[in-house]
Structures are given as C-alpha cells and as structure tokens.
Picture 1 (cartoon, rainbow, N blue to C red):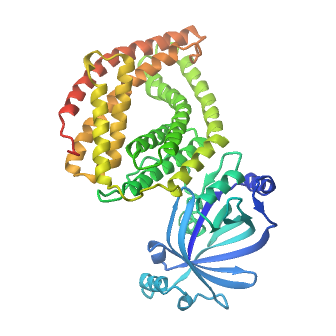
Picture 2: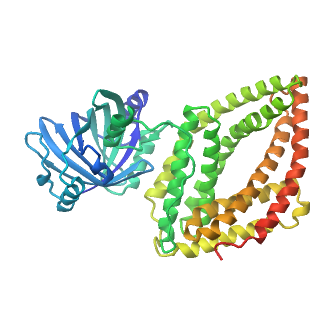
Picture 3: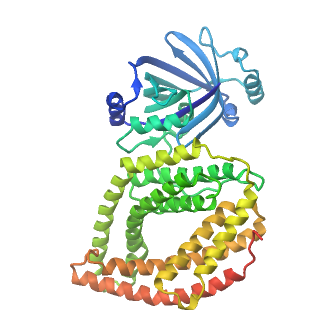
Length: 508
C-alpha cells in the first residue's frame, strides 16, 4: 500500500492553535479518536535495514501489536511517500514470515543476511486523529502527535502533525494545510519518527541542526524528461529556500540571508530555464512572489555586507578615524531592526502561502505533456538563450552606465545558475573551465555592485548613523575608497569578459 503524508513539526503553541482552530478552518472534521501508541523500531547492530531504506517497527495500540514495514520512502516539501505493509503479530514479537508483501519480505531477509534484529529506539505518543472530508472531494486523516522519542537513556519531546491522504489527490493535503495553519510560521518535517529515533541514538537529538543551507547539485541526464528534471530542480530550490527561511528566523548568522537570497534567485532562474515545460501562469506568479520575497531578504543582506565586508575592514585599516565606531554601531542597529522585520516577513501567512503553493506546484500539479520533451534539447536551448542575453548586455562594455553594468551583472548571474543546473549533462572537462571564467567575472561584478550599494546606502536620507558628522566622515571615506577600487575592478571585469567571451561554450 502506498502511504502519502504531509508532515509538519509543531511546538506547544502551534499544537494548541491547531486543535482550537479546527472548528474555524472550514474543514469537515468530526470528533477526534484518542490513542496511546508505543512504537519500537528494529535494525541490525550496523543498521543494514536503514541503509537499504527500510523501517521496521512493532506498534502497540489498544492492547494489540501490529508489525509495519515501510520502504521506498521519499520526503520532499514535507510530503512523505512510502510503500507500507503491515500485519498483526500476537504477543508483540517480530515475525518476518508474517509480512504479507513477498517482495518486501525478501528485501528484508537479503538486507539482514541472518544478522540479529534488535530494538534501536522507540516512540511513545498520544495521538488525536480526525477524519476530514474535503469540500472538493477526498478524505484526509489528521493526526496530532505529542510525546517522546527514546533511545537507551536518551529521550526528547516531539510534537508533529501528519496529514495522510486516504482518498483523492495529493494536492488536497496542501489545500488542507493552508486552512489548518493560516497564521504562518509552519515548518515542514524532514524526518520520520524512525529517523528521529536513530538520530537520537547516534547524536542525542531528534532534530537536524538549524543552519544555513547551500545549494546542492541535482542529478540529471540528457535523456530525462524535461518536466521530471524541472520538478527535481525546483524541489532542490524549494528545500534550500525553506531551510534558510528557518535559519534566518532562528539565528542571526549573516550566511542565512545570503543563502536564502541565493535560493530565491536560483528558483527564478529555474523557472526561466524550464518556462516551456511548466504551466506558464502559475510559474510566473510564483516567480514574481520569489522576487518580492527576495527584495525583503536583500535589505538585510546588504546591511550584513556593508558591516562585515566593507566597513569593519576599513575601520581596521584606518584606526585613527574616530567616526568608525559610530558608523559600525549605526549599521548594527539597522541590521538588528531589519532582522526583526525580515523574521516577521518570513513567519507571515504570505510567506507560508508562498512555500505551500510552491510545494504543491512541484509535488502535485498536473503538468501537461510531462516526460515528452527531452531534457538535452531544453538544456541546449536554455544555455543558448542565457548566453545571448549576456552578450547583448555586454555590447559596448567600454562605456556601460552603472545601470547597464547592473543589468549585465544579473545576466551573468543567471547564466551561472543555468550552467550549474545543467552542467552535469555535459562533459565536465569542458564545463569546468567555462564556469571558472564565469565565477571570476561574477565575483568582480559583485564587488562593483557592493560599491554602488554602499554609496546608495550611505547617501540615503535614512543612512545608518546619518545624524552623526564623524560617522558621516567615515562613510565618506568608505565611499571614496570603494569608488576608486571600483574603477580598477571595472577594468579587470572587462578583461575577464573578453576571456569568457573567447572560452569554448561547453554545450556546443
């Protein structure tokens, strides 16, 4: 049996609001059934089942024991899919021979190879279960779990909501989540209870660390369906965005806004690459929402760059200038205020709606013609278009205005994202030199953009420490140094552009 669930992490306040808000959600949910569940997860001493992607448990419920096997599990955008096979086991003892699915039974035996199966961890959960009938058709089971995960002497509390599809389409899960979590701040669950138990046993915690997440490569092949590839690429973008939204909300590290902005830009680039493969109207709407969210993130990122990458280094180089402490203090205060504003934005219903809409689009939307167009053709065309756009923006590069340089910088960045997404389809011997030229040029353009950003920030009416004359003198010095450096950088950028222009295009 195929199990499809949307899993959401809760805290105590969210659990309470979820229970209280059910009646106001507009969903037809009856009175809950309450159960106390004890689940024991088994594996070999070297975790052979886990390596094979199999979870094996015994669950005690209402005085009886049920043996369950889950395999072929995947989880993305909070949506968990797995093959599930279960059977009653009198006495609460493992009995592999009772597994009704012969294929799964043989897979377990092959994975274990005669090794002893023993308990690794367990969960003890109080579950409230609601049966929900959706207005548009379909049935969902909402389980609200509160309890503990245990492994040896270790124990951690867990609260979680699971929306399991009983009948209908998976899109109904996201539709229900919008109604059940209207206030924002929702967090997709990325681990099953079994995985949390194994993590507890190994590392003493049930949650992965909240930290900035870099972009990751997406495995692609030239004969892959373009729509399948588009979903994989968009899924990676979504995961990077969701992880960094969480990182920004829970920590003040400058890398969080940086990686979040990258994730949003990569998403927009992905929509451009695959624009002919996906529903245009919804893709355009999500791309526009990503742009708006990116602007909010950019304000915080610009202040981080100004403080850490520009002003503090210049303050260290000019210790005798008295205005730097006040300028630094002004930037710190502005950064803290922007962090609070950004955190509020990221926990808003609007930001949450964007995540849910994007997840539903990636995981459940019907894309006509799925799998018909070969990815290789789409990749060649997308790289050609991105390259032509860069060449067009670079015309007359010797005399480009600041605004035109900015447009060229954005085109170079889009070409880089396109090359990084699609580069695995080509010979790496040709890809890597081209991408090196591209990165070198983009880094210089980044320096040029920072110089323009610094000048605009410090000359604005609401400039940090703008009312302090000494701080303004320090800001003037920074502007002057960065402007002078920008002229050198621009000369270097023109040189690197010529190098990139003459480099062989790896896709041709």
